[in-house]
Image (cartoon, rainbow, N blue to C red; front, side):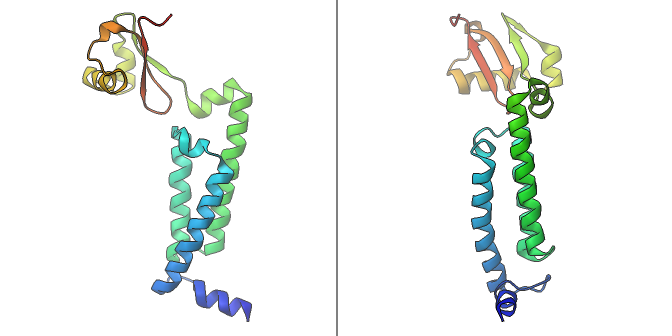
Length: 166
């Protein structure tokens, strides 16, 4: 009786009604909130490459469950496993600089004491205009003269150390 009711509400396979997809979407939304809370605010706040991969993958897997392309509860389990792996790796990153460098990467120095480091700019696929755009956005200035160093951070943003900072 209970399984019939679950099948009626959530459906099975790819032949789902709008109401069944709506029910799956509502439950998936709640499950996603729980998984994000389980994953920690780091997943949303830091937005590193690693965190972005988890978010996109989790969304992709859960979407398959909503539309019936994969069994619903299997997609929930798969997304949960991804979040648990993310949590474990985050814990390992906090404990080991070696693992942190591998998982998160390291900042890349782009500008140092009046010199644009062109090789690092090339590695990062950045132009001088990209650097200046970030300079304007981050420091509200257009002059690199006021900058001691600029780094491409692991989250993709460019940070600046002002020349006056010691």
